[in-house]
Picture 1 (cartoon, helix red, strand yellow):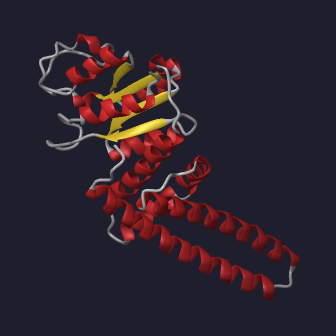
Picture 2 (cartoon, rainbow, N blue to C red):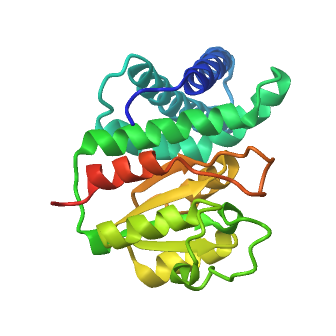
Length: 256
């Protein structure tokens, strides 16, 4: 659960390169604005310049904190909770910029998403907080169910006949053994509604990189441990999840 995969390491490296390029661009822009302010004499233009300069400095601080956090993750060092809190600002203000930059440098957006979800997970692990079983919600997409299965489990996972053809039966087993709630959802809107209705203290979310990132942006105030699904048959079709990893996460966060 703590060890990074080769794919995660590559994603983290690419994200740090993009952040470094962004920091260079921001530093250059700050230098230009400082020079303009030194030369400008009209009060109105100076005030506008000061405001823009303050925005650039704030973005630089957020980008720098993100870079430091990713470097600590790279060297397997703890992520302080305050640094993780700063990363929420990174997510809101710099993630769109980095995704646009990724197009210029032919970097997959999933690399950025994968790096951030890894940072998110590591920060939660470092926080060492534990929860009661009834405070934990496992959210999983309906594509984890076999497409050929005719049983509707989005309202009630216990309808699963546990034939073993997909991972739903394994999640149902974890629900029984750990007394947590497992909910299968058909999309982000329903996922957000379930969270609002059930009010969990911790969410363990299973989805693709894009949906996980979207979820992290939607519920910034709620701890979410993000698990990327496996897609042997392509996106949104007969996906899988590492059940051993799900159980390890439950063991780590549930009070005993």
